[in-house]
Amino acid sequence: MRAFVLALALLFSAACRPQAAPALTDWLAARYAEQQFDIGTAEDFYRRVLEADPGNLKVQGHLLRIRVAAGDGEASLALARRMDASPATDVPGGRSLDKALVAMRLAMDDMRQGSWQAAANRLETPGSKALPEAVRMLGLAWARHAAGDAPGAEEALSRAEKTKGARGWAQLHRALLLQASGRMEEAGSAFERFRETGFGARGVLADAAFRAAAGDAEAARRQLQRYLLMSGQPHVEGPAGLEPLVSTPSEGVAEVLFGMADALNRRRVPVALLYARLAAMLNPDHGAAVLLAGDILADRDRFDEAVAAYRAVPVDSVLRATAEARRARAYASLDRFEDAAAILEAEASARPEDPFPLGELGHLLRGEERYEDAAAAYDRAIARIGGQAEARHWRLYYGRGIALERTRRWNRAERDFLKALEFVPNQAYVLNYLGYSWVDRGERYERAEEMLAKAVKLRPGDGYIADSLGWVYFRTGRYGEAVGQLERAAALTPLDPVVNEHLGDAYWKVGRRLEAGFQWQRALDFDPDPERVEGLRRRLECGLACN
Image (cartoon, rainbow, N blue to C red; front, side, top):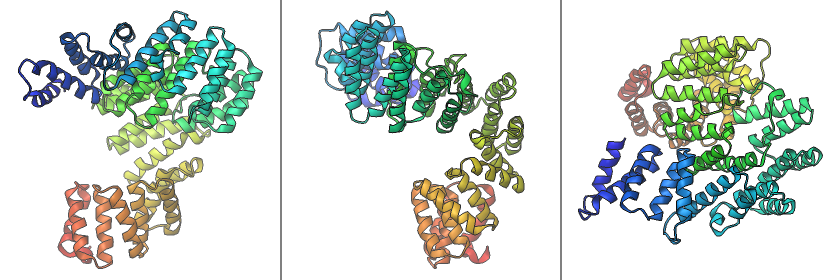
């Protein structure tokens, strides 16, 4: 990567004056590496630029972002102090983010030292106003609370609640602050108001932990089950071990930073990584923040860095098992499948009643198209469930169903798909896989159509599901309807060979022979599975007449 980045930068800087080219080359290389999430390379090049121009606040700002993205607490703090002491104040481009990072990094240092009034003062400086208002107000509420300023904390919470889009988030932190203060009756009322607004997975977990602390084990269990389904993290076994989401003001501010990271990441905003890293700097035991940093890096194909993040999830965190599963996925993405399998087998041995490490192994084997081995791994996982299957286990049945279907054991596969649907009747992918399988086998067209129409409503932008519904129209002789649905599928998923083949078949049936040939040729060009190649070639020779 480094050689490519440097070559690209040299290309763009070739027309520059000879004496300016080295600094510009380093700057362009750094910027490109930053955009690619190549954190180590970006830091090296930014440092070289800064050596040539030590007082350049713009470069310092980018280097600060990189050091925060790397999770380097000491280096980011030193640079934040240097930038804060600089007399320069007006640097064009990107300064809002840099000011926000400087203010928050310095305020976090005040918090670490127990100087909560200083931290509160820091969050009221002009530079801190570059922070998102909800983040600043919620951080200020926790800082004022820790400094003994109850009216000031209430004022900050009220301002956060009035910030556009932040009402529910602010209500959650009001409840967490009251719980952390030991004011359980008031916290209960605050959680009740919070429940009325509706909340995401993190709020459900906070509510489960509160109910567990309040002694309502059954309500805690119900909320925990909701959390497991919403979050896709099935490794928390019960409410007994749940700790409050926040116990100290530092943990409260870290939770604010994590909340911002989570919200930004759902919109794939790159600075989500910075907020996740800040949360983990302030509270190294915040397993969710560390895990999120790994997920963001893995999502950008930075698998080595993701592995390092997953390793940093605390060993005693309830998210440690999830982190190990994700580390295994990262290794698989690095073509280190044996290392991935070893992690999951070790997890399975360490927790002999937990089905999910073996389920994750099944998922990875299925991704490698080792369907026999995948089915065997799923068998081992589901054997651990016994007669205690719950909604959180649906992916195990769905995954085994796919592996069994691909190894031509349809009766067992069908049972697994139906079992998964008992738990998640609105899961579009399960509806689609089972519905399409029935259609492809010439079975249960009416029920398949109902399921596929439901799946399309659930995921209208999914071209594969649109194709399945179009295919049931085709197989039941409604060729005009099939054309409309399959055209939509091809628009959504234009490079899939099966979708193009299906559209070609539908065009042929309605007499659009030239367009049918065009779609079949496209299907052949898009690397179809070997067993479909001969059929496509026959279609191109004589259409559906010889098929």
